[in-house]
Image 1 (tube, rainbow, N blue to C red):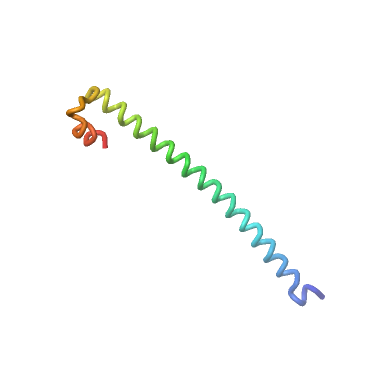
Image 2 (cartoon, rainbow, N blue to C red):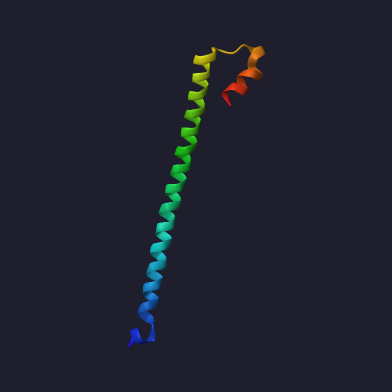
Length: 73
């Protein structure tokens, strides 16, 4: 009788909503971790670019600092 009144389908919908909310939470946490990893990787790339510039052009003089920044950006 409850099924004919629509009670069971409502429970199923509520369960699906809870499951969806849990999935969203998991994905949000995963996105935060990926963003953190992305920031770290960008910092590593910047560091390696700077090291490559040192290796290629040598350590800059203070007078050449503006030129140095333009070559490493």
